[in-house]
Image (cartoon, rainbow, N blue to C red; front, side, top):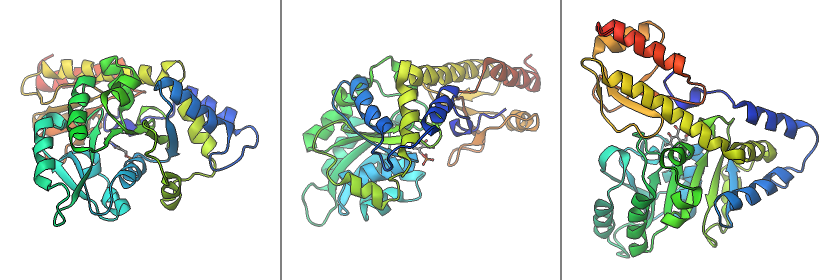
Length: 346
Ligand SMILES: Cc1ncc(COP(=O)(O)O)c(C=O)c1O
């Protein structure tokens, strides 16, 4: 049973059907197909504003391309010290921007602290030739620690951006989990709170390589088409990414899938927290549980076939368990029962 990532999940049946329907026949390549056209229209309805949508194959590409769009080579990108863009993209944002500096900031459980952010932007020295120029702020929603910004918290970060005239980017690799966790609408979670560009990720929530850069404010996407092409992410058969994204938002499927992962993570965390020596270290607001497990319990669970990852940079006993579209109650309960037996609690 695999709790190591939400990337272990398969493809949702609804998306497989959408892929199969899109496969029957020919369509114009490179986004000149009817699925991509409908996707732009549908996401404009869903986000309650006219959006521009650029499907890409990976979340790293979405983030790096979005930041390339927003930051010059001499720019500064402000982000959390544990953000995916800073630690898990092998320097792609630095490479695509041509050398922009990622200024990493501390903050509880993956969230940027608006005061720290404001101070960092001031410190960086706006328009002083010796220093990089503040260019963009990036937040992750849900965060790398499985916490979720409320729309109000996003607005607090956006207020700092606005004070300094900077755009706000959101890494939404787990956007659906955040929507489900807060009950906010996509508009409330993004542009109404001040987000300008969203990396919208469907892959972790049941799609096959379907992500998109979504521009939520007019006038920001100039030459983005060329950047995506240069980066090798202008997919010739874009209809398959677009068809999945369309099916994913239809009937609120994305929110249901996100909510399911969140509920499974809560069930897991609730059961684990009751065991001796176990400590859940971050609020479980999305689909991830960060927990200290006594070494005997951690190794025992692995020996019985449960897969989950050690958390790099944390103490050795810190692990991350992730729930996803295919995680079910029986799997969660099997892990909890085994854990109870191994700790002598059951
Ligand atoms: C917060 C976050 N952003 C972006 C990504 C996208 O990564 P990938 O390039 O693997 O699709 C991930 C995947 O782990 C992630 O956790």
